[in-house]
Every structure is written in C-alpha cells, then in structure tokens.
Length: 81
Image (cartoon, rainbow, N blue to C red):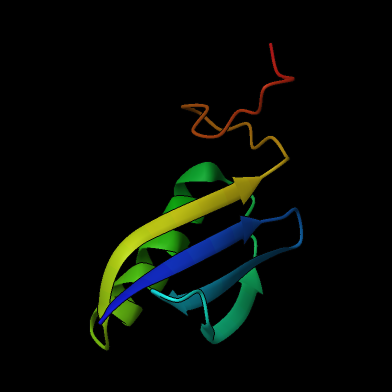
C-alpha cells in the first residue's frame, strides 16, 4: 500500500501526517522546528526515512509560510527578496 507524508513547516513546530491512498490519516505527529534550513531538511529526511522502514512512502508534500535565512538560503518564501 502506498502512503504519503504531508509536512507543515511552522516557525515553532513541524507537523506531519501519514496518509493512505484514500486520504485517511494513519498517523500524525510534530517535532520542534530547527533554526537553520539544513537542519530542517535533515529533520524532514529523518521522518521520511523512519516511515520508509514501516511502509512504502510514495510522495511527500510540504507547506511553509516562513523564511529561514541560512548560509545557503535553503528556504525562501515568495515575499523574500
């Protein structure tokens, strides 16, 4: 069975949900948001890898409305210069 992970990257927490093909939420959770884009990406990869050990993860989606300014400007929203 294919599953999907949806991430909501907020300034305080990263919330995530694991859904099946019918859109039913199988699991949800949250972790604290790191202050740097590279660490945020590492957190997202860790969550995806943990779930990939349990189920087949077909796709991940991301939602974020904030800016993380790091050395390499990993995250930048549409209002940034």
